[in-house]
Image (spheres, one colour):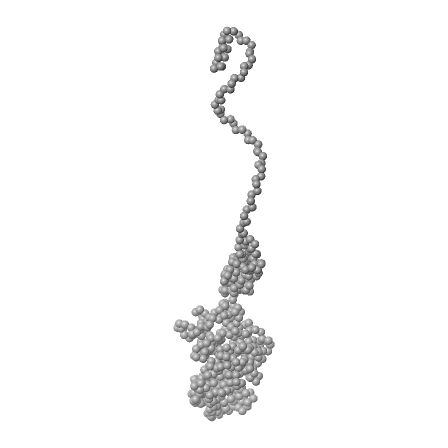
Length: 540
């Protein structure tokens, strides 16, 4: 209101007084007017400078101890080697187990382990624990393995090599089972070969397995539904040589024995051979094998049935004579002879080789066969050895005097002449020995062939004609064991061994046949002949 009054007075002065006068002094500042309304928001101001750092806070309290980790202060794991690692693993054969030997450096017990390996070879087969393995390779090679072992905290490794090769065991067969006949040998129904009736042999054959069982079939029975016998499972070492011996069991059956063949070098290879002896004489107890050429010195002592002698003596090459002392009482009941290493190329055993002799029985007759297996070769041959029975149950000696002309007609080779004479025998159930005495007057004995015919029609040729032989007359005893010093009569070995008649029945007609192949009309005379038999009773 004060302003309004001033303005009114100002206007009135103008009107009253005309032109304005000098400017008057500025009046005093009026009182402040009321606050105006809020103006619009101004633009954002520039940021201010950073303030100074604040003072450090007070240090906090020590935190609690932490929990120990699982591998803190764990001892170091250490592989010390590989035990039982095979020198070679064989294709198709599970190897022996080998073990990764692991320990802690401080000697403390090893707990659970984890094992991994790297290799391009056959898979390792885990054994009883994580560090024991074997393998069964399927091919030949040389393989490297790196094995890592850890307990979860520390780790160690080892690298080794394993060569692989084909497995080769070697098996031969000997058949001295006289009651078995020919035998077919099979493995798991697959034919390998046929073994002839006793005595018979096979060479060593390679077997690519650690163990094998053979089936023995009747080779003469094509309709057989099963084997006669099966061998026990035979464990065969790599490059080892074994022999399966088939022999009678003493009760009418077939027995099987397995022996190791001794093929190590002979000490004096130039003039000796090694002898192995096997006892397959069913029903005969312990025997001693003796050297008859050395006053029956014992070579093998107390050899039992179905066993191989533990002794393997070395004998000089040449004529060898073995004796059997049944019961070891000093009385040598049986004798066998063979030649070793002499000239001519027909011998079975040679210097430096190993011989296996098998004693067995064919009916009542003791026999022996010899097999040769050269060192590392395995070649097998056989020969039937001579035998003698000094104490037969029955001895029979019968003499006939045919006094017949042998060559009554002329004509040479176009007019041969044959004459025979017979001696009837009773009381000889089984022949174990035969000798024949012959007395013939003849200008040229080279014209003569003489044959002995047994009751079962078995024949043994005592001599055969040789027109280049110009000797006269025969007064001789034909025997498998001639005494070369005998002169009355002379003792002569037959062309074929008389021991081939052993085991036949002696009962019946024995015939001696004499053939003069060159008729000359000289009326040469057959004076006499003598049949000497050694026999065993059937009751025995």
